[in-house]
Image (cartoon, rainbow, N blue to C red; front, side, top):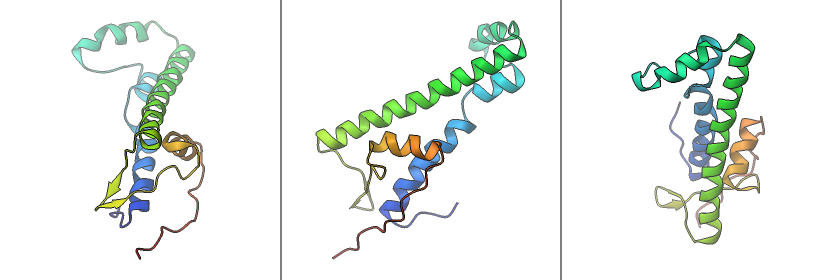
Length: 129
């Protein structure tokens, strides 16, 4: 991945990374495909439970875990949007304000939109005066 050059590109890269990593990391695919939650010793009880499930049940559990992961990221971004909108918090890149909320629905809207296949608007970042 090449390094983003503008605040807009950085924001888009951050949201897209959240979308991609929710699918790459986490236990949902491992539960669905391998029947394993985690190899961590403390998680043995989860693996024992998963072993009792048939393939259809494991797939449903996998989908539930993915949904919860997506929802947690959504909720975190919704909270951050509230801070940005109501508490004068902002994001910057190299000292420049980072545009956020490109969907008009908050950072969480951008996340959900990108996760569901929405294309970034083709608007250009404002030029420096």
